[in-house]
Image 1 (cartoon, rainbow, N blue to C red):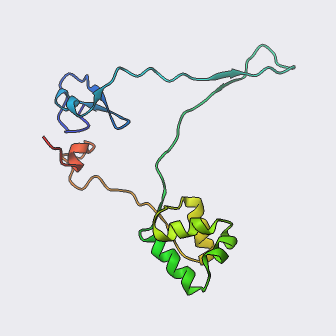
Image 2: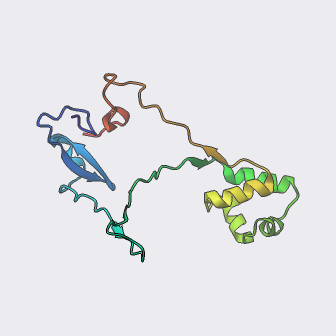
Image 3: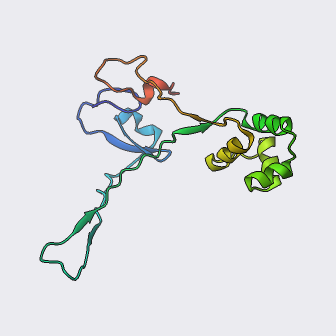
Length: 166
């Protein structure tokens, strides 16, 4: 097994788990100084619900909850969204109040978005896209980490991507 920070081979196959900014990493003893050493996390509990039906025989209906979630965003707001929105609104001859009534938002929200003081969420960005007929949301492409691998069967580590201050 390799350290997830520096990529060194962990000799004992007993990596030390540390926490860095909410992420748990398996690291070697040299890299434990970059985070807080963690205890072995408890195994997640499986929630079992028994259904109580009137016509149930001796078999129980058991449901297990699966905790599989993909938290990675798929869409991203384009750069200079505020300039795009303001230019298109002015090009169409709309005031902030007219646009606000079209997308059912306050004029102050539009002013803050256009000034760059507020970053619109995906829902608000889609409202702008529909009302102004512009593109503000783009799909995030896959990031290729295999540009400079040490070998074909080894996954890249943080040490392959960032420069670590020593």
